[in-house]
Image (spheres, helix red, strand yellow):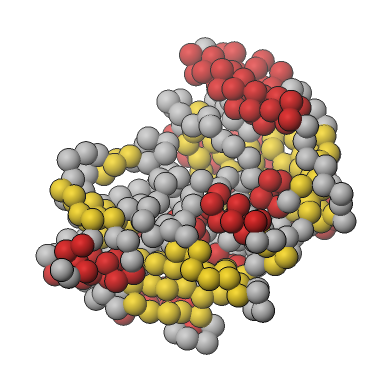
Length: 443
């Protein structure tokens, strides 16, 4: 029996939806390859039939970047660690592996990624392909920690890419938007596991914006949340620690991370959606609910937290020196508008990197993310926020809502032409194309 015939195929009879529920797709069929060979055969077979191909992970992108009307690949059988190289300090992992499983497996081996985002539900390929990031003064996005990747191209070839092998593909494919091929495996740089001390503290908007540069410079990882309709923020500083480990208490941790940040937050957002006039009063209470705390734990237990309240999100990367001005403009816009915003605004940073279409490519960056509770009208808020962000040369997160197109990206990414030329070479027939890529990359 051929490898292609063993690939798990099913004629699609249902609609795929993303996590937030704002994107839907009805593919011709789905495939669940269990090896790189089966994956290559799936891509080759679809191309021969004239069908487009997209891979979906856990659907945490808010854009339609993974939507397809052709063959939808589910990578849930492409999981697990292939190998750990302790001399080189790398780990090679199958592309469909969820970050939460990778983090837990690395911890058991006494290893860790250097930096990560604030959730870990996504697959490793989905997270890196869209530019998922956390916050860091010196350490960059998850994709910037890639040392090698394996890519299945439109003609079914399997390319290995690194700084030494196919370097021009490596430069782009670490954040490839699913436009260059299907990532089948990723090799990450790792390091011996370490401890982080998290210091969470309320701070006023005026103080955190006036001291932003110092807070960024003094901490390995700094982020904060501003609560619209208030002058209040919640800050978080993560720095390496000699220990000992002192994780949050079981009860106090549940109160902060589950009851307040998820359970009660769900309730107050539901009230705000039903009665928008109540949002400013609720915001004032919510912004004071989370108290100061300090704890020390292994990295993924400090960087990440559960997010069960569903929302829509837009996030822009700005030159770091423009962040405070843009945030103050955003606050002034909300204050003078009739908008009612129940979700906090998240602010993070990243150092410049060398990935072609990374939002931090070639410049130190700050990220400003705006959110709206699922089911709440969001367009007016996001449109006004986007107007502010683009005025500062902002680059939108590839997996979060925005209205920008290829003409805009050609202006804000100096190497945009490199990416599109590579796409023309690797996928001239647009096997991996869809409506989203047509808008952001051009034809």
